[in-house]
Length: 206
Image (cartoon, rainbow, N blue to C red):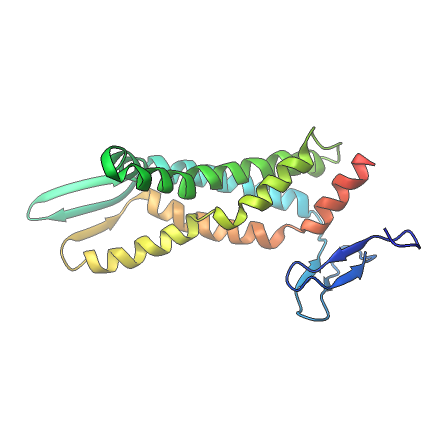
């Protein structure tokens, strides 16, 4: 805290320090040095973030268990899901690859979404945060760089372009669920004002 009792916040991009801004809904506070958005509270932001997070969880579950792609070549047809792909490499020397796919594509994104829902749900209903909500949100922010569901779908798309010349490829519902998941997660990240969430958690804790 400063001598005047105002807190300091740091830009997450360039670490420039600012006095805590007094900002209203639909206004945006940006860093003067690099232009990074520091705070952007929006009307019904909690409810919007909660809805998008729950949508992402549903899409993730469908993307894991439903058929992802179907390949047909020389009269042979094979259909597989993300879960089947993970289990296919779950033995021998390929076990680390299986664990990496399960963690980065499924478990970490789901854990992050669950932590966000745990944090946002009481705030959206204008209630006191759940116990350890700050820890859960800190976990969600820490897992953010490791949530790679969107990278997976881009990588698969590139691979399928090459496979399409060798076999007939058709997309299953899980592929479209993953594609929708990428869009929903981008919208969720853009709608979530982290400054506002931390501010609400700190006020309740105080």
